[in-house]
Image (cartoon, rainbow, N blue to C red):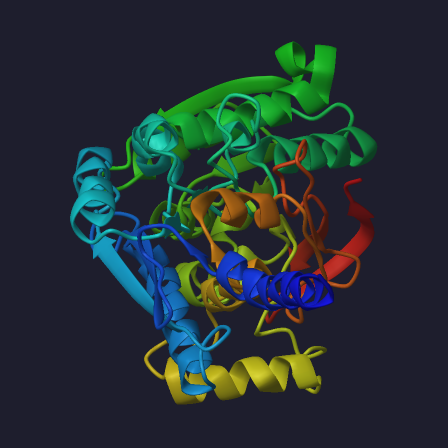
Length: 400
């Protein structure tokens, strides 16, 4: 009897020792003992190609991680396609990634229209659509779309910040708005109008759209100037943002100029527009600008610079999109680390919905924080003004 009891005890003990080893390793399509396959879609060509450096930067950060041994011993395989910022092409590429390349998840697809085009498909397939490179408010809807999460601050919250600043500093403003004629542009505009409240109807005297396929927005700028507006809210992607800043200077229009944060890169917007033409432009941001001298003596900047020089040498050191790529990739890697050996799609979403991170190139006071009910990872940002040489932060940190 004692022998039998000892045998049972030994058997249970062996089972307890072996159990976790088997239980820990759980894989869905796209993950195994050796690698994790991650899919991406970026506009490497087309009207939003200035953002293509983000996809390249993510690949370069994954190269760094792989060179250091990978994530929990697994190498990251980055399969990234070009959609030219064309939603129809995005759908084609997403299907290819899920059904042919068999990725574990889709990461940091750029743009509101492209992400909107694959939103339902990925949720129906139960494939994580993680940390989208767009601030559309719709990405924070865990109840209806539990497989989708944004990353950067929402466009509506940013629009409300500009509205609040206008009300505080120029309560009798006459406002003109230029916005891209799609969900991205309309989302920013809604936040701005919501922020102005009842005054929106009287303060906004002109609203004009442009299409992403338009060659220029020169005629729109002339029309906006003729409206007599003394405040300009510029809701444009980099190519058009640079055009708007330059054209306003060319025609001698000098309103208080608010520029959406997604087009505040010194390398891809301010330099092409002419730094002198952007003086006093105001934007909101949440990342450390690589051209800001106050960061360049810090270890965080030096680590970013070393990564750029070694793994992303073709990237522009003045382009904040390369700070974006570095930081969003760090977020993704942290999720994979925390997922451990449970690399199921369900666990990836669970980990993503329980984050509280401070990352090196986020502005002081800004963090990445989520919960199962809160799919907005970054919600804090600060206003900054272009002084001719760099962005200068001012005022408080906005957000919860």
